[in-house]
Length: 233
Image (cartoon, rainbow, N blue to C red):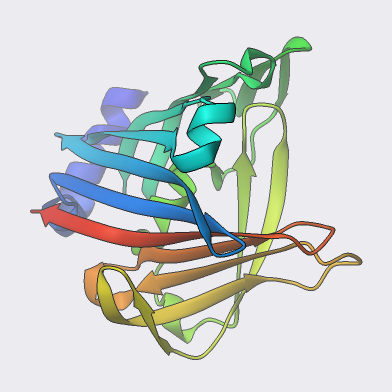
């Protein structure tokens, strides 16, 4: 089945594979209350019609002294006519290991295996499901994103599947450490609490996330800003 699917994609969507970058290297700063608390290094690599994303978060400053917990996240899968299709997701903390999770995607059986502190279990796999890392790289494959008013995605963190609805707003110009960029602005629909996810996608860099703001239920904000980006075709 997988070989047949690969053959079909080769015959119908060669332009997609030509457009998929061979490698993306990105760096982010993580900021809360005006203080930089962590740095993120990410790498996307394409080998044929398969991809691998690796993300490493390291605390800095006082956080590194009092809570030196690093976060290593990986996503591996295939590149299809609709973009990224994850096969395996891994979320690993160096110290708070009870938060570690894992997910395996069985697309032929439409089944998702979740693995966390509560053990292993299986759930039905929605056709558009991404993991929390691949989701950020999937935006470059969403057709006519700038012409949409909303976008719905299913995203797993290895413990559950969330249905995430984004509202697509008018283009904005934002300034991040990397520079001043033209962006598409996405935000989650209003909730009962202050919780919200906001994402700014750099249109000149293939809808690559350049700013992400997570607002907790209590109103506290965590901001991730792009400091360096290299895209190799």
